[in-house]
Image (cartoon, rainbow, N blue to C red; front, side, top):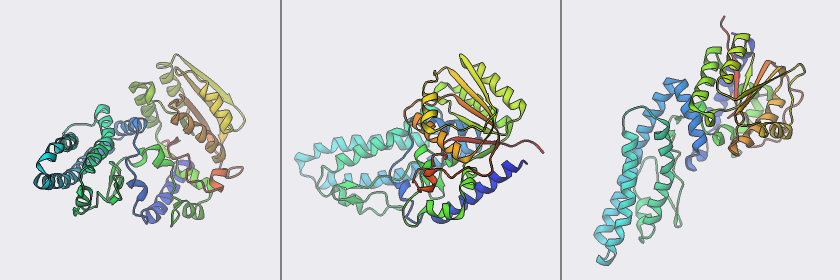
Length: 369
């Protein structure tokens, strides 16, 4: 095991321990603001499930469990609907038909979560509908006086409905179970980059216990050359919209050659550039250069070295392009990662809640013994 890979694993475990100790003191409030998964996030999760069969099993089983929880919430809604049927004046009972229509949609959603078989991209995309199903159901329910209050009084564990005036609290994330996020390291960008500034403050605790460069290492994942190549090939096989930028540190010659060959078989052109000096682009420079890259052109830069500060700069640019729906086919191949950055990035020094390395594919290549 290389020194880099060993450091990555040690830093990752350290960061996970800090987050496990501190995060959740607020009751996981950030995970109770609705599902953060978007279409791009689901594509990333799908790639992770293809790359890691054990993750696919975890997500499939976890969503079935969430389906059972949603059925309990549905049962509470149906209890309120039954009370309304028994108590509404005759002239208003016809108004219940719209509520029953919404409850049928909720029931159908639960049925789909229970359906056996692998999660295809089509089935994953269907999950995005639940926020609208829930919101529409509660909107219709609010038209009946006392119905929201009756729903809030249902004894659900964990509580799913809480009235705040005429509004209901946001649902728990669809991918959240008591033991944590089903998506694991393939979680949505907003979740991967977000560090709570509440009390206790997760980012303050991380910064107190970890120097900047250790935090950078903690955001890497180690992969063998075969895993890296398979990951890239999965993206290419699925289509251009699945392709995401990669920072690959300490690739061997075979991986470099195989990666370029795979890119050439799927892109109209592959531009390769070598840099003797350590890689360093500012955020604005990276965004300008990569935004101008045609969609069917892959850009490969081979450089001897870079550091954590440089990775932050390019991560911010790549995050902006991701949010704009323009992720470039960009591959930075780095000979080695500097142990000490020239300076901690200002986003780290200023304790910004968004630390943009979490969603970036930072890969430390793990070679055999």
